[in-house]
Image 1 (cartoon, helix red, strand yellow):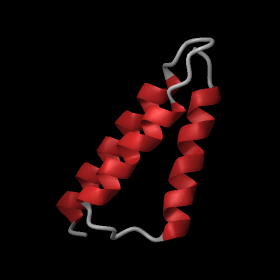
Image 2 (cartoon, one colour):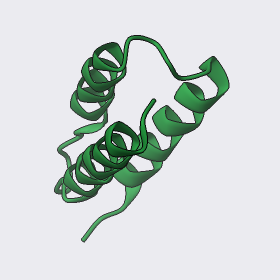
Image 3 (spheres, rainbow, N blue to C red):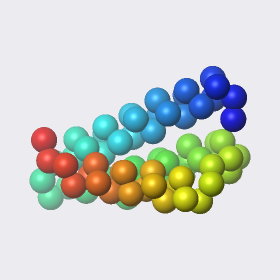
Length: 68
Protein backbone atom coordinates (compact mmCIF):
# COMPACT_ATOMS: atom_id res chain seq x y z
CA UNK A 1 0.00 0.00 0.00
CA UNK A 2 1.50 3.34 -1.00
CA UNK A 3 1.89 6.09 1.58
CA UNK A 4 -0.90 8.10 -0.07
CA UNK A 5 -3.27 5.13 0.00
CA UNK A 6 -2.25 4.33 3.57
CA UNK A 7 -3.02 7.91 4.62
CA UNK A 8 -6.45 7.79 2.96
CA UNK A 9 -7.13 4.39 4.55
CA UNK A 10 -6.21 5.66 8.03
CA UNK A 11 -8.35 8.79 7.61
CA UNK A 12 -11.31 6.69 6.48
CA UNK A 13 -10.90 4.29 9.41
CA UNK A 14 -10.75 7.25 11.80
CA UNK A 15 -13.95 8.59 10.27
CA UNK A 16 -15.71 5.23 10.67
CA UNK A 17 -14.61 4.88 14.30
CA UNK A 18 -15.73 8.45 15.09
CA UNK A 19 -19.11 7.85 13.45
CA UNK A 20 -19.63 4.64 15.40
CA UNK A 21 -18.68 6.38 18.65
CA UNK A 22 -21.42 8.97 18.03
CA UNK A 23 -24.19 6.38 18.22
CA UNK A 24 -26.82 7.12 20.82
CA UNK A 25 -28.16 5.01 23.68
CA UNK A 26 -30.02 2.01 22.31
CA UNK A 27 -28.63 2.53 18.81
CA UNK A 28 -25.71 0.37 17.73
CA UNK A 29 -23.62 1.37 14.77
CA UNK A 30 -21.00 -1.36 15.18
CA UNK A 31 -22.49 -3.54 12.43
CA UNK A 32 -22.54 -0.61 10.01
CA UNK A 33 -18.98 0.33 10.97
CA UNK A 34 -17.76 -3.21 10.39
CA UNK A 35 -19.56 -3.30 7.04
CA UNK A 36 -17.93 -0.02 5.97
CA UNK A 37 -14.57 -1.32 7.14
CA UNK A 38 -15.02 -4.42 4.96
CA UNK A 39 -15.69 -2.20 1.93
CA UNK A 40 -12.59 -0.16 2.69
CA UNK A 41 -10.45 -3.28 3.06
CA UNK A 42 -11.86 -4.75 -0.17
CA UNK A 43 -10.84 -1.54 -1.92
CA UNK A 44 -7.29 -2.14 -0.70
CA UNK A 45 -7.44 -5.56 -2.37
CA UNK A 46 -6.81 -7.53 0.79
CA UNK A 47 -3.47 -5.95 1.66
CA UNK A 48 -4.17 -6.16 5.40
CA UNK A 49 -3.26 -9.12 7.58
CA UNK A 50 -6.11 -10.94 9.38
CA UNK A 51 -4.80 -9.93 12.82
CA UNK A 52 -4.92 -6.25 11.81
CA UNK A 53 -8.48 -6.69 10.55
CA UNK A 54 -9.46 -8.29 13.85
CA UNK A 55 -7.89 -5.40 15.78
CA UNK A 56 -9.75 -2.82 13.67
CA UNK A 57 -13.03 -4.70 14.19
CA UNK A 58 -12.40 -4.67 17.94
CA UNK A 59 -11.74 -0.90 17.85
CA UNK A 60 -15.06 -0.36 16.07
CA UNK A 61 -16.90 -2.47 18.63
CA UNK A 62 -15.23 -0.57 21.49
CA UNK A 63 -16.16 2.74 19.86
CA UNK A 64 -19.77 1.58 19.75
CA UNK A 65 -19.70 1.14 23.53
CA UNK A 66 -18.73 4.80 24.07
CA UNK A 67 -21.70 7.02 24.85
CA UNK A 68 -21.43 10.75 24.28
